[in-house]
Image (spheres, rainbow, N blue to C red):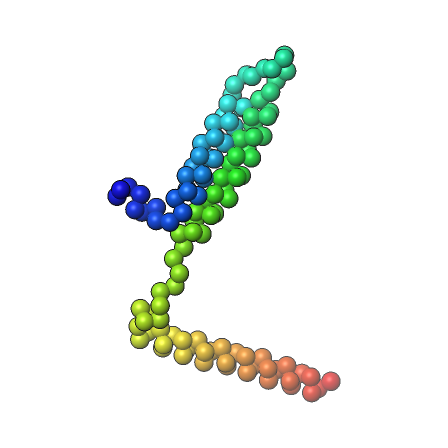
Length: 112
């Protein structure tokens, strides 16, 4: 089953999203381009609206499929030596920004 290996997880959400896209697209196109009459009244609007609802529902399927395929962050061991250097740099910059803001705030409150 090499064809589905790239799809990874959440294959059911993918199938639902694709089916909703197909149903919504078909319903929308039939509602727009076909002249459908029931008891002498035009009923293409119902197909257009239902097609739009199917397409909106397919967005939920796509979001579920995409969010189900997001891989978590790799463990720290895989980051290697660079990770610890980046962490130290980020902490140092964050502390300097925080201490600068704190000193600025205290100096303004003492003036009042």
